[in-house]
Length: 252
Length: 252
DNA sequence: CGATGCCTTGAATGAAATCAAGGCAGGTGG
DNA sequence: CCACCTGCCTTGATTTCATTCAAGGCATCG
Image (cartoon, rainbow over all chains, first blue to last red; front, side):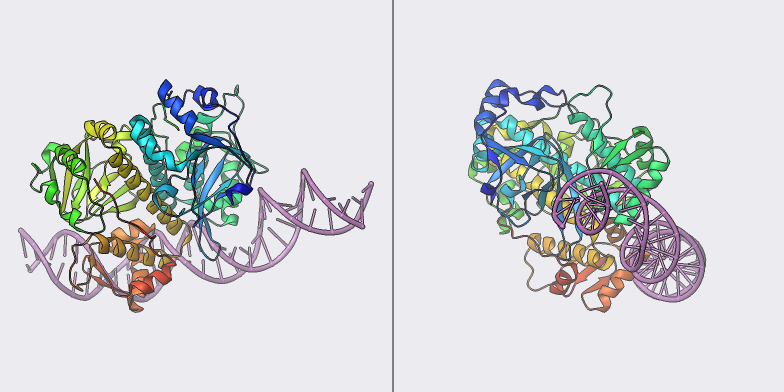
């Protein structure tokens, strides 16, 4: 099944990885970089809406998002869907496949994505030869966990408006730190209201009404298939949430 | 602050660790065991209701639950509380403190707990000298992540009754795999309905009514400060959830 | 014997889901 | 070029589910 997808040999050499240029991410030492470059099998291009991994599947690969947005989700038998988190450049995808036999969630592309593909088999080698990179993987897992904690608090205890404000300003701040620096240009979150609804645990209709209120307050502007954050500070205050202080992030 | 708590030198040597005897957990190689034994600083005893870590604190230690139950939670300014997950024997506590500067959640004891205390500083050493243990830590982090994913699906998309059934059977199955083998004796989950409410994102009153219905269906029995699962299979069906197949688990 | 902690229940209120339409832009095919 | 989809957003009316309010019960403990 993976073979039916457009997998191509590495086009973007790790030495010239565009993510390394951003100062959100930490630098590799030369031996680390060599290892990673060798570890990389190729690239996967995914178009919007394309399924990258499916719950219950076994996946021999491990990915890192190089460009574009995606999301992880689970569905119940009757179709109720919960989006668990979003995938942005620098995020790892499919680590769970190494630990559990089967994937416990699905992954879908939101925009056109480029993913770096790694050989799962060689993960052990990474742990043996590069403890610092192993530690980075743990770091990434712990960071994912802390995002999920915050989402749980949000869905469990925040009101609809607070939840929506939280989600949008959360994504906004993540987008800001991974977007190629564009002079003053505003960032658009590439979502539909259905995605928002499925993330917040609300119905589409109620999500729409809630977003309308935020828009009426001048906090956001909703475009076709996208959301523009106009007043991030206002959203922070509605949500009662501020992003945790973060030093330079690792990525693989 | 940690010094005001009853920290005692190791009483239970790792060689005779009671968890290693359970066949839920994997065995250590002799060198691994030596390292862990040396890594262990002491034990922490926590009584029910005692705070083990607080959000915003910096924690120099890392723990593993040796006995007893606890939980991780977050609170909003106005007091709304969300329980994120429960801590059972074999679970790691405080890894996040290594990655983020400050803890992003709090930890409290539910029953009397014994925790093994490790020196955070030496975690890097563990990564350098024992890649297999490093991998185990990643394994534990990924497992925690997959539990949080399931909780998110539950709170976001399941009905009150489904959620309650899920939580109880989830805890029941976790308890079963870590409890010292007691011949046919039933397991009691050491919770109050307030804990259940704060885990499910429901009010106490509505939680009570929901649990009542499950009890009326003969699925559970509610005791004072505890819940007895009578019909696990029934709960699985209400929740539409079964525990993922799991091979022997690592622990540190 | 009065507190306190935990569970229980009924009644009133409120938030969110569901039901039901409709609008509007972009794309396609006759 | 127009007719007709289709996907995404919007709005009002109704119903369902969950919260809040209010009280009481019943053990345990000092």
